[in-house]
Amino acid sequence: MTQKYLEGMPLYRQEKQFSRMGLVLSRQTIANWMIQGADRWLYPVYHRMHQLLLKLDIILADETTLQVLREPGRAATTNSYLWLYRTGIEGPPIVLYDYKETRAGNNPKEFLSGFKGYLQVDGYSGYHKVENVILVGCMAHARRGFTDVLKSLPANSPKPETATEGLQFCNKLYAIERELRELDPKERYEKRLEESKPVLDAFLSWLQFQEQRVAPKSGLGKAITYCLNQWDKLVAFLADGRLEIDNNRSERSIKPVVIGRKAWLFANTPKGAKASAIIYSIVETAKANGLNPYYYLRYLFEQLPNMDLTDENALDRLLPWSTTLPVSCIVFNKLSK
Image 1 (cartoon, rainbow, N blue to C red):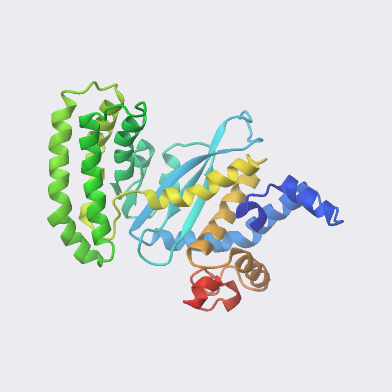
Image 2 (cartoon, rainbow, N blue to C red; image 1 turned 135 degrees about the vertical axis):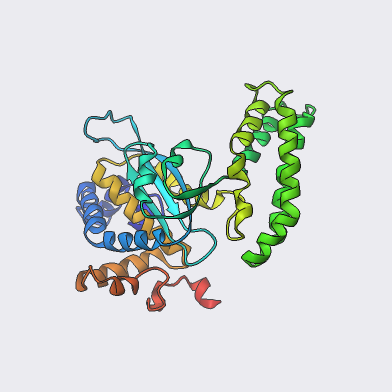
């Protein structure tokens, strides 16, 4: 599991590695171990983390494609999706992935059933189907529209003043965020109203002014339209000092899947895709909590077969942030601190 989901080594390469060691171990056998280990033993831990995530009032979400070859009634080249749901800046990190065949908005609606609070996402409209949430947008996506315009220009060419001005508004907001990083949420909330809100008000006036003067289908026009269409979500971070200005925390959590996917390319079956979602969830949550994923997985497989998997208190003692985990699970650098 750690070879594939941390080091990006596909099972066919692991099969060859074992062969060189004199072990006849087929990739199908290893794949079956992955599915059995995830479905039978790791799922209760995953499910418990899901329950605890839904009790919070801030969740971040994102999604990325995943190719699954043998989905019933679907071509092998059809894209499926791994959805990501995770905690924000507060509390122990929880990072969960959920395999679904489509990008339909019903998928986050189902996964987040029972959740009430802030949901921070990018501009994808599918998240509008999630009930009882306040959507919080991503200023990084807004800024990217202006940077893409500037990057598309030939080298040494004059930078368009309007795109530069739009970028400067975004950069000013990020500069304020860097200054407020170490404050507690209450102080951050107050400082944002004092410093960030005037910048946002000026940015909105500028966007409305430029909208009438820029071709809507141009790169700059699309950047302006995105900001205006998302405005209520882009300013929602002002409502609570625990919220972040962007959804970059989710994008960083989706990156291991994107990088790993370049090596192992696809899942063979829906069962394999579901197992991948569970294993990624365990591994990435372990990493986020300062654990060594290999030793943590080993500890789980030693403990889970010998306990009542319906006992929530017992499962809580195995979660990645539990203070009862053995020292061997903790990354050395964290232990030394």
